[in-house]
Image 1: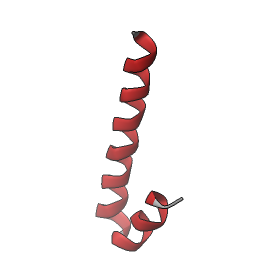
Image 2: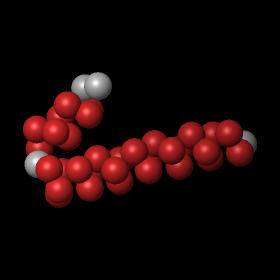
Image 3: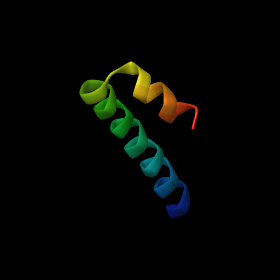
Length: 36
């Protein structure tokens, strides 16, 4: 339903943010976010 769609969209947004962090700050910062 709508709730599942919202959850999937949020997860996708987080992945996009991680990619941006990789490009701007490098792998180490992203690794910290993943294991946060």
